[in-house]
Length: 195
Image (cartoon, rainbow, N blue to C red):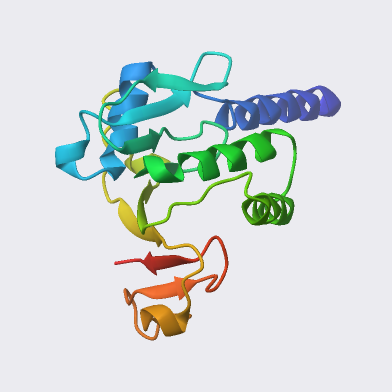
């Protein structure tokens, strides 16, 4: 009897854990609504949006007419995390997604893109280019409406090969919310602003 109870308890626990980690693919309209929350309000309606189909593959959910590309929340990752970026960054971002899909880790992705930028086969923007990131907890997300409460923004301005000398920015923040330059002097140099 004790063994039957223990086995039953174990199986129920496994079912609960499996349910907690179940991939949830939201309807395209909800994915779009949430993805564009990262964009400035006046640019949301015209932004291109990538999201996920019922098989979990990333696809274009909406073609855009302005210069922003937005990414829906990845259903495989914990929390809610959406972003929008300048179309000038699209080849760089798309290449990162391709390499990740091939099973490459973060260091391999960085190394490959660095090599490709240096070889001239991967282009980077020639002017500063914006990335908006919005994050929050699943507990604060309405799965039916696509609304996210208590979220936080992070702003990233890609400015390839910028240095602390060329920008006047430090390479680390000295106070909370202060802009700073991450990866100075590299193809992925970018200004970080976390309000």
